[in-house]
Length: 304
Image (cartoon, rainbow, N blue to C red):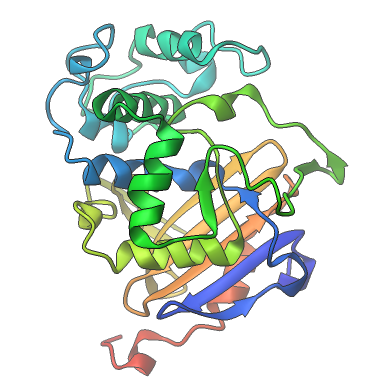
């Protein structure tokens, strides 16, 4: 897939300036899906919550061995949707409180801290803890305490802007409805334009926001090497590694009808955002095509 084949939007920023943007969908807002995990983590870090006390401090039914650190680093032993959370059917509409209770009471699939198991339900618990600790809804907290503080304007949590074009998800070219999971805190959809996401990522990683350096810290070693992309570790909502030889922090996401990817290149102060509203999209070829437009670190005065 080339950039011109992308059904969606993409943008590159360097030093906060947009240097590339797909023109025809530049103003369209997209669901970010799991790209929003590092935003949840950033909000919790900025709120100054103790990551190492039992998460049952806020969620009494949760296993006392689980901490926020475990939830944010996917080491809590919380399962991922079905069958990881018994009784959790993504195709059945349930009140948010009932969904959270199912997650909170689900048996752990591993000893907390013993292994990495990707878990969006774990992030739903983290998002709920943020709400309980701050007394704000998840969307309100992100909008007022993260996006507004950083001055990021083309990104929002909760409902998308009513007066802007909104991308509709597709599967094999046909519209597909979203599922009921988007109402969960921590996994609730954040919306942005491609340039808006790239701008937010730049503002976040170049800010003095409390705890921002912990987002890509090597909390969990994770060595992979595939198709020009390596990972070395997982932090809080971000993988750390390289993309085509450049140091990078990244995270993908998917919702029914959508594929998303956000990448921050710290040595270049560059951000790439890819937002596709076709579920069959593979964003990696697009990422390689966009990364080819970036300078190597040595070209900007950094050591290679």
